Length: 299
Image (cartoon, rainbow, N blue to C red; front, side):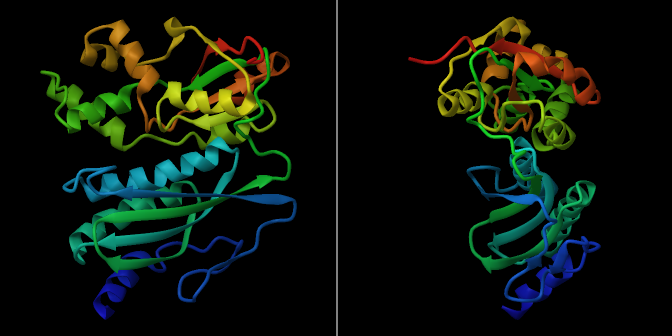
Protein backbone atom coordinates (compact mmCIF):
# COMPACT_ATOMS: atom_id res chain seq x y z
CA UNK A 1 0.00 0.00 0.00
CA UNK A 2 2.90 2.39 0.67
CA UNK A 3 3.70 2.38 -3.04
CA UNK A 4 0.15 3.38 -3.87
CA UNK A 5 0.21 6.23 -1.37
CA UNK A 6 3.51 7.53 -2.71
CA UNK A 7 2.15 7.61 -6.27
CA UNK A 8 -1.02 9.39 -5.24
CA UNK A 9 1.02 11.84 -3.19
CA UNK A 10 3.21 12.44 -6.22
CA UNK A 11 0.43 13.00 -8.76
CA UNK A 12 -2.47 14.44 -6.73
CA UNK A 13 -1.30 16.08 -3.51
CA UNK A 14 -0.30 19.74 -3.30
CA UNK A 15 -0.71 20.40 -7.01
CA UNK A 16 -2.86 23.51 -6.66
CA UNK A 17 -2.87 26.80 -4.83
CA UNK A 18 -5.26 26.60 -1.92
CA UNK A 19 -8.57 28.47 -2.17
CA UNK A 20 -9.15 31.03 0.59
CA UNK A 21 -12.19 29.06 1.77
CA UNK A 22 -10.22 25.83 2.23
CA UNK A 23 -9.09 25.56 5.85
CA UNK A 24 -7.60 22.06 5.58
CA UNK A 25 -7.24 19.88 2.50
CA UNK A 26 -5.33 16.63 1.93
CA UNK A 27 -3.37 14.96 4.69
CA UNK A 28 -5.96 14.47 7.44
CA UNK A 29 -9.01 12.26 7.92
CA UNK A 30 -11.30 15.03 6.64
CA UNK A 31 -11.04 18.25 4.71
CA UNK A 32 -12.35 21.46 6.26
CA UNK A 33 -13.90 24.28 4.25
CA UNK A 34 -15.39 27.61 5.30
CA UNK A 35 -18.22 28.74 3.01
CA UNK A 36 -19.02 32.43 2.91
CA UNK A 37 -21.99 33.79 4.85
CA UNK A 38 -25.22 33.72 2.90
CA UNK A 39 -24.15 30.79 0.71
CA UNK A 40 -25.56 27.32 0.45
CA UNK A 41 -23.40 24.36 -0.58
CA UNK A 42 -24.51 22.31 -3.59
CA UNK A 43 -23.14 18.74 -3.61
CA UNK A 44 -23.07 16.12 -6.36
CA UNK A 45 -21.44 12.69 -6.60
CA UNK A 46 -20.86 10.70 -9.78
CA UNK A 47 -19.01 7.49 -10.61
CA UNK A 48 -17.40 6.47 -13.90
CA UNK A 49 -16.63 2.79 -14.45
CA UNK A 50 -14.35 1.32 -17.11
CA UNK A 51 -16.36 -0.59 -19.69
CA UNK A 52 -19.56 1.28 -18.80
CA UNK A 53 -18.72 4.97 -19.10
CA UNK A 54 -15.48 4.73 -21.07
CA UNK A 55 -13.44 2.06 -22.83
CA UNK A 56 -10.64 0.43 -20.87
CA UNK A 57 -8.03 1.70 -23.34
CA UNK A 58 -9.36 5.28 -23.45
CA UNK A 59 -6.86 8.10 -23.11
CA UNK A 60 -6.58 8.85 -19.36
CA UNK A 61 -6.59 12.58 -20.17
CA UNK A 62 -10.02 12.16 -21.78
CA UNK A 63 -11.25 10.14 -18.80
CA UNK A 64 -10.15 12.86 -16.39
CA UNK A 65 -11.81 15.62 -18.39
CA UNK A 66 -15.04 13.68 -18.74
CA UNK A 67 -15.17 12.75 -15.05
CA UNK A 68 -14.66 16.28 -13.78
CA UNK A 69 -16.62 18.08 -16.50
CA UNK A 70 -19.70 15.93 -15.91
CA UNK A 71 -19.65 16.74 -12.20
CA UNK A 72 -19.02 20.45 -12.71
CA UNK A 73 -21.97 20.46 -15.10
CA UNK A 74 -24.23 19.18 -12.30
CA UNK A 75 -23.23 22.17 -10.19
CA UNK A 76 -23.76 24.54 -13.10
CA UNK A 77 -27.30 23.26 -13.63
CA UNK A 78 -28.08 24.36 -10.07
CA UNK A 79 -26.55 27.80 -10.56
CA UNK A 80 -23.66 26.91 -8.23
CA UNK A 81 -20.12 28.14 -8.59
CA UNK A 82 -17.63 25.21 -8.47
CA UNK A 83 -15.46 25.20 -5.36
CA UNK A 84 -14.18 21.83 -4.11
CA UNK A 85 -13.86 18.23 -5.25
CA UNK A 86 -12.97 14.93 -3.56
CA UNK A 87 -11.90 11.91 -5.57
CA UNK A 88 -11.94 8.17 -5.00
CA UNK A 89 -10.01 6.23 -7.60
CA UNK A 90 -9.59 2.48 -8.04
CA UNK A 91 -6.84 1.23 -10.35
CA UNK A 92 -5.98 -2.34 -11.38
CA UNK A 93 -2.32 -1.39 -11.06
CA UNK A 94 -0.35 1.69 -10.13
CA UNK A 95 0.62 2.91 -13.59
CA UNK A 96 2.77 6.04 -13.40
CA UNK A 97 2.33 7.14 -17.03
CA UNK A 98 -1.48 6.67 -16.77
CA UNK A 99 -1.57 8.73 -13.57
CA UNK A 100 0.60 11.43 -15.13
CA UNK A 101 -1.78 11.98 -18.06
CA UNK A 102 -4.89 11.65 -15.89
CA UNK A 103 -3.73 14.03 -13.18
CA UNK A 104 -2.40 16.62 -15.64
CA UNK A 105 -5.73 16.81 -17.47
CA UNK A 106 -7.66 16.76 -14.20
CA UNK A 107 -5.81 19.72 -12.72
CA UNK A 108 -5.87 21.64 -15.99
CA UNK A 109 -9.66 21.62 -15.96
CA UNK A 110 -9.90 22.08 -12.18
CA UNK A 111 -7.64 25.12 -12.24
CA UNK A 112 -9.54 26.63 -15.15
CA UNK A 113 -12.76 26.61 -13.13
CA UNK A 114 -11.16 27.42 -9.77
CA UNK A 115 -12.11 24.10 -8.19
CA UNK A 116 -9.71 22.58 -5.64
CA UNK A 117 -9.07 18.89 -4.96
CA UNK A 118 -9.38 18.69 -1.16
CA UNK A 119 -9.18 14.94 -0.50
CA UNK A 120 -10.10 11.44 -1.52
CA UNK A 121 -9.00 7.84 -1.46
CA UNK A 122 -7.25 5.30 -3.65
CA UNK A 123 -7.32 1.53 -3.78
CA UNK A 124 -6.45 -1.36 -6.05
CA UNK A 125 -9.33 -2.77 -8.12
CA UNK A 126 -11.29 -2.31 -11.39
CA UNK A 127 -10.69 1.09 -12.99
CA UNK A 128 -13.29 3.36 -11.35
CA UNK A 129 -13.36 7.09 -10.63
CA UNK A 130 -15.81 8.61 -8.15
CA UNK A 131 -15.96 12.37 -7.68
CA UNK A 132 -17.89 14.42 -5.15
CA UNK A 133 -18.03 18.05 -6.17
CA UNK A 134 -19.27 20.94 -4.08
CA UNK A 135 -20.16 24.45 -5.11
CA UNK A 136 -21.54 27.66 -3.67
CA UNK A 137 -24.85 29.27 -4.46
CA UNK A 138 -26.43 32.28 -2.73
CA UNK A 139 -29.28 31.39 -0.39
CA UNK A 140 -32.56 31.15 -2.28
CA UNK A 141 -30.91 31.42 -5.71
CA UNK A 142 -30.39 27.75 -6.62
CA UNK A 143 -31.87 26.60 -9.92
CA UNK A 144 -33.97 23.46 -9.59
CA UNK A 145 -35.98 21.08 -11.76
CA UNK A 146 -39.31 21.87 -10.10
CA UNK A 147 -39.68 25.58 -10.85
CA UNK A 148 -41.10 25.56 -14.40
CA UNK A 149 -44.60 26.96 -14.81
CA UNK A 150 -47.29 27.04 -17.45
CA UNK A 151 -46.34 29.43 -20.24
CA UNK A 152 -42.57 29.28 -19.63
CA UNK A 153 -40.31 29.18 -22.68
CA UNK A 154 -37.86 26.30 -23.13
CA UNK A 155 -34.25 26.93 -24.12
CA UNK A 156 -31.00 25.06 -24.64
CA UNK A 157 -27.44 26.33 -24.79
CA UNK A 158 -24.97 25.43 -27.52
CA UNK A 159 -25.51 22.74 -30.12
CA UNK A 160 -26.69 19.20 -29.53
CA UNK A 161 -25.86 15.79 -30.95
CA UNK A 162 -22.10 15.89 -31.43
CA UNK A 163 -21.40 13.86 -28.30
CA UNK A 164 -23.56 10.99 -29.53
CA UNK A 165 -21.89 11.11 -32.94
CA UNK A 166 -18.48 11.04 -31.30
CA UNK A 167 -19.49 8.03 -29.25
CA UNK A 168 -20.65 6.27 -32.42
CA UNK A 169 -17.17 6.75 -33.85
CA UNK A 170 -15.51 5.50 -30.65
CA UNK A 171 -17.70 2.39 -30.58
CA UNK A 172 -17.41 2.00 -34.36
CA UNK A 173 -21.20 2.06 -34.74
CA UNK A 174 -20.99 4.72 -37.42
CA UNK A 175 -17.81 6.06 -39.00
CA UNK A 176 -17.56 8.72 -41.67
CA UNK A 177 -15.17 8.42 -44.60
CA UNK A 178 -13.78 11.77 -43.46
CA UNK A 179 -11.08 11.04 -40.89
CA UNK A 180 -10.84 14.66 -39.78
CA UNK A 181 -14.59 14.72 -39.14
CA UNK A 182 -14.41 11.49 -37.13
CA UNK A 183 -11.55 12.87 -35.05
CA UNK A 184 -13.31 16.17 -34.39
CA UNK A 185 -16.51 14.47 -33.24
CA UNK A 186 -14.53 12.21 -30.91
CA UNK A 187 -12.86 15.29 -29.44
CA UNK A 188 -16.23 16.95 -28.90
CA UNK A 189 -17.47 13.84 -27.12
CA UNK A 190 -14.55 13.70 -24.71
CA UNK A 191 -14.00 17.43 -24.24
CA UNK A 192 -17.54 18.76 -23.82
CA UNK A 193 -17.46 22.00 -21.83
CA UNK A 194 -19.73 22.73 -18.83
CA UNK A 195 -21.59 26.04 -19.15
CA UNK A 196 -20.44 27.60 -15.88
CA UNK A 197 -20.96 31.28 -16.79
CA UNK A 198 -24.38 30.56 -18.24
CA UNK A 199 -25.48 28.71 -15.11
CA UNK A 200 -24.47 31.62 -12.89
CA UNK A 201 -26.12 34.16 -15.18
CA UNK A 202 -29.43 32.27 -15.17
CA UNK A 203 -29.91 32.37 -11.38
CA UNK A 204 -32.32 35.32 -11.47
CA UNK A 205 -33.79 34.59 -14.90
CA UNK A 206 -34.58 30.89 -15.32
CA UNK A 207 -37.42 29.16 -13.49
CA UNK A 208 -35.80 25.70 -13.81
CA UNK A 209 -32.70 24.11 -15.29
CA UNK A 210 -30.93 20.82 -15.89
CA UNK A 211 -27.77 19.79 -17.69
CA UNK A 212 -28.11 17.57 -20.76
CA UNK A 213 -26.29 14.44 -19.69
CA UNK A 214 -28.85 11.77 -20.62
CA UNK A 215 -30.32 13.36 -23.74
CA UNK A 216 -32.64 16.33 -24.26
CA UNK A 217 -35.86 14.30 -24.26
CA UNK A 218 -34.93 12.46 -21.09
CA UNK A 219 -33.56 15.47 -19.21
CA UNK A 220 -36.35 17.86 -20.19
CA UNK A 221 -38.70 15.11 -19.05
CA UNK A 222 -37.23 15.40 -15.55
CA UNK A 223 -38.12 19.10 -15.45
CA UNK A 224 -41.64 18.47 -16.76
CA UNK A 225 -42.29 15.69 -14.25
CA UNK A 226 -40.95 17.60 -11.26
CA UNK A 227 -42.76 20.80 -12.28
CA UNK A 228 -45.97 19.06 -13.35
CA UNK A 229 -46.15 20.84 -16.69
CA UNK A 230 -46.14 19.76 -20.31
CA UNK A 231 -44.11 20.95 -23.27
CA UNK A 232 -44.45 21.61 -26.97
CA UNK A 233 -41.13 21.40 -28.80
CA UNK A 234 -40.35 22.87 -32.19
CA UNK A 235 -38.01 20.21 -33.55
CA UNK A 236 -37.13 22.44 -36.49
CA UNK A 237 -35.46 24.86 -34.05
CA UNK A 238 -33.13 22.29 -32.48
CA UNK A 239 -29.53 23.56 -32.72
CA UNK A 240 -26.92 21.20 -34.17
CA UNK A 241 -23.64 21.52 -36.01
CA UNK A 242 -22.90 21.32 -39.72
CA UNK A 243 -20.44 18.56 -38.84
CA UNK A 244 -23.26 16.48 -37.36
CA UNK A 245 -25.38 16.89 -40.50
CA UNK A 246 -22.43 15.73 -42.62
CA UNK A 247 -21.82 12.78 -40.32
CA UNK A 248 -25.40 11.46 -40.21
CA UNK A 249 -26.27 12.45 -43.77
CA UNK A 250 -29.15 14.86 -43.31
CA UNK A 251 -31.20 17.21 -41.17
CA UNK A 252 -33.79 14.70 -39.94
CA UNK A 253 -31.17 12.31 -38.65
CA UNK A 254 -29.35 15.22 -36.99
CA UNK A 255 -32.57 16.20 -35.22
CA UNK A 256 -32.87 12.69 -33.78
CA UNK A 257 -29.30 12.88 -32.51
CA UNK A 258 -30.00 16.31 -30.98
CA UNK A 259 -33.02 14.89 -29.14
CA UNK A 260 -31.24 11.86 -27.71
CA UNK A 261 -27.55 12.70 -27.38
CA UNK A 262 -26.26 12.62 -23.81
CA UNK A 263 -23.09 13.88 -22.13
CA UNK A 264 -23.38 17.21 -23.93
CA UNK A 265 -23.14 19.25 -20.69
CA UNK A 266 -25.27 21.90 -22.33
CA UNK A 267 -28.11 23.38 -20.29
CA UNK A 268 -31.83 23.00 -20.83
CA UNK A 269 -33.76 25.68 -18.96
CA UNK A 270 -37.14 27.38 -18.76
CA UNK A 271 -37.78 31.10 -18.63
CA UNK A 272 -40.97 33.02 -17.76
CA UNK A 273 -42.25 35.44 -20.41
CA UNK A 274 -41.36 38.40 -18.18
CA UNK A 275 -37.67 37.41 -18.09
CA UNK A 276 -37.07 36.65 -21.77
CA UNK A 277 -35.74 40.10 -22.53
CA UNK A 278 -32.86 39.64 -20.11
CA UNK A 279 -31.37 36.65 -21.90
CA UNK A 280 -29.50 38.50 -24.64
CA UNK A 281 -27.46 40.42 -22.09
CA UNK A 282 -27.13 37.66 -19.49
CA UNK A 283 -25.96 35.07 -22.04
CA UNK A 284 -24.05 37.42 -24.32
CA UNK A 285 -21.10 35.01 -24.55
CA UNK A 286 -23.16 31.80 -24.70
CA UNK A 287 -25.18 30.63 -27.73
CA UNK A 288 -28.74 29.68 -26.81
CA UNK A 289 -31.90 28.68 -28.68
CA UNK A 290 -35.59 28.71 -27.83
CA UNK A 291 -36.95 25.26 -28.73
CA UNK A 292 -40.47 25.32 -27.32
CA UNK A 293 -42.88 26.33 -24.60
CA UNK A 294 -44.85 24.80 -21.76
CA UNK A 295 -48.52 24.87 -22.77
CA UNK A 296 -50.06 24.35 -19.36
CA UNK A 297 -50.55 22.07 -16.40
CA UNK A 298 -50.68 18.32 -16.81
CA UNK A 299 -54.04 16.96 -15.65
